Image (cartoon, rainbow, N blue to C red):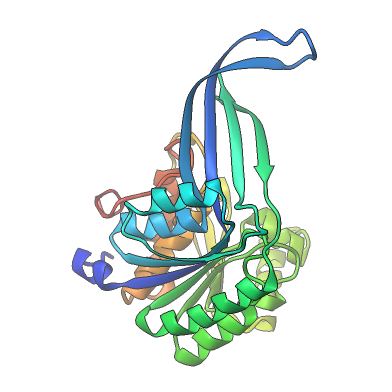
Length: 309
């Protein structure tokens, strides 16, 4: 099943969540440090990319949909860099600034084609900024056909329950990329998209497929969700909904980098649902998008042409 490019372009998705700046330092590793048993990386190239919820929004516009991004950042060098990177994407940004906040930065040091080290810089936003974010959400909601919450557990979604309730009352589909061990805050969402490790944190381990089905359906019913989409790496994906479950197998290809694959999957689901597809119709296309993106390095995206090739 396909969706016309024009239909997709009319779809507007509101992305709410934690943004990050992904920094990559690439270098040559020729020796071990005399000070400690660690490699010395002579940095030869630096790269910066938009990450987390900003990458989700970027996935949406790359696919051909329209996207607004609502988030809280610091008033620091990293936030201004993020703003500059987003300025050329076509994403409508709504940044709440908190002077006490450190905009999240993930710095990865890459040597000999592999990640040697990752450094994270972050803290949690203040409540006043988050309250103003909820007011902005109420203003933006009516002009969007779907809402996507990208939860990276950095504190930017403290008021997610109120926002989900607002979107539910408006009849707008709500998709959530969840985090943590308490999913009660996602009550009433349309779809949540945990991976295996994330789902296990909430429902415990499962012994076989039938045990998994029972646990996934119990979770779906207790949270009042339409569906749970479990992403399973090499095992593909399974969608659990009121009609049972449907699985799609992974698209066999060389896996180069799984960074950001979950962002691509949920962005594709949101774009197609906003364009009028059902969750079941969107599932194989989201699976294909995830398969395409793991063949690229770093947080990457998929175009309309690639998806429907």
